[in-house]
Length: 135
Image (cartoon, rainbow, N blue to C red; front, side, top):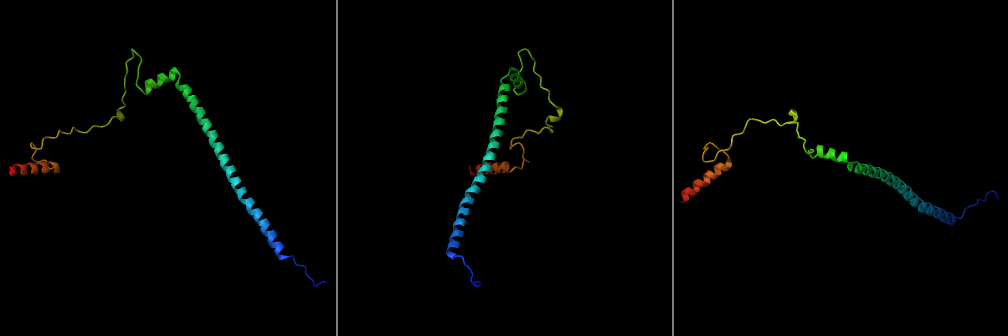
């Protein structure tokens, strides 16, 4: 009896492996999706908290903009308004003013300046001379 080996039935083992493998495969994919969705939910919750903070800041800014002091500050600084009886002054920073070059002479008419060599002037002169010769 020593020489006798006990063998497991091959079809039963194969079926058992297929069933266990199938169960693992069907549980791994939903578990992976569940973990991905948990991460997405966490990021959306953080985004929701950030939007709530931003909405609260905007509500405070809205309340601040309705105060008479803020309305006057905006009217004076941004719109340049003054109260009746006040004299407005504008202070210009000399470093911010544009530098002007020498004045550019006004262009003269084409018939007054024979030395003008722009292509349009030459074209117009050629057209005029052609019209004169056709007549």
